[in-house]
Image (cartoon, rainbow, N blue to C red; front, side, top):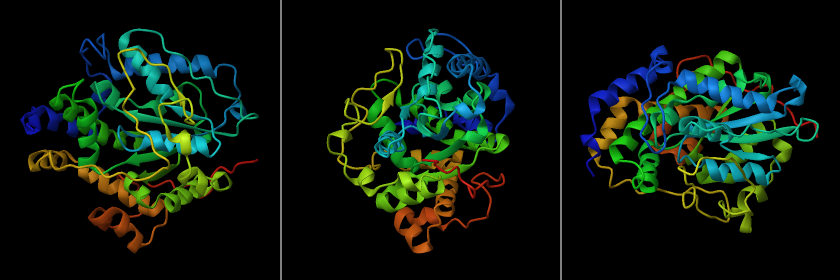
Length: 360
C-alpha cells in the first residue's frame, strides 16, 4: 500500500494548522471534487448555511423547550453508529448525523432538511452522533457544535461525548470502507485532518461552556461496565440497563427499520448502505492493521494523530474514573500517559461534576 507516497509536505502543513486551531482554516478555499462537493466554498460560509437551516427547525423555541442533548462527535469509524443504536435502546430519540446531513446538502448546493426535535416536555433527553470525514476536507474540518449553538441551541443544555479510536485501526477501516469511492492518499489526508479536528471541537466546547466526556472505542472491550460509567457521568444512570448493551436481537441490524436510529436526509451521492454491520450487542471489534505499513503509522505519529489519541485515552480514564489495571487492560500502552488534570489538549478540563439529571 503506497499511502506514504501522499504529498506529506501539504499533509504536515494541514496537520500543523489544525493542531494550532489556526484562524485561516475558516477562510481557506475548499475546492469541489465534482462528486461529493460540487461547488467551491469555505468553512465559514458552510457554517453560515448550516446554521441558517438548523435555525429554521429551532425557531420559536424558548431555552426550556430544547431537550438536553448528548452530542457524540468523532472521526468516522469510531463505533459511533452502534453507540447511536445503544442510546436508542436506552430510550432516547437517537439521531444519525442530523447536522452532517445538512452540511452534505450545502456541499452539493441543495437545501438541507431542518432538524426537527421534540419539545423537552415530550423528551427530556435526546442523543445525536456527528462524525468527521471521509470524502472531502470540509467534512473533516466542520464543527457541528458551533452550528448548533449559533442556530440557537442553549449550550447549557448540551453535553459532548468526545469519541476516538486507535489511529491505525480507524484508518484501516476508512480504507476498507471507502477506498473504492475516494483515492487512498485523499482518505489519508482527510483522516489526519478529521482526527486532529478533535482539538478544535473540544476547544470550542470549552469556550462556550459545554462539558465533555471522553469515550474511546477500546473501552468497549468491557462494554457493559464502561457504558454504565459513561451514562452515570452524563446524568443518565436511570436510563442504563445492561440489556440495552448486550441484547439487541433484530435491533442490531443497523441499516434496517428495526434499529433504534433516526437517520438524516443526505444527497444520493453519499451512499450509506453496506457501511454499517449488524450485531447482537454493542461490543468491541478488532481491526487488522498489518496492511498499513510502518511508513503510514510514522506519518500518523509525526502529524500528531497518536498524540491526540493518547490524550483521548487519558481523558477517558479520568472521566470514567478507571483504575490503572483496568486502563491498561483496555488501552494497553496508550494508557501510560500521565493524567495532568487538564483536558486532552491543554485547556482546563470541565468535568460534568453536576450533570444534568433526568427529571423522569
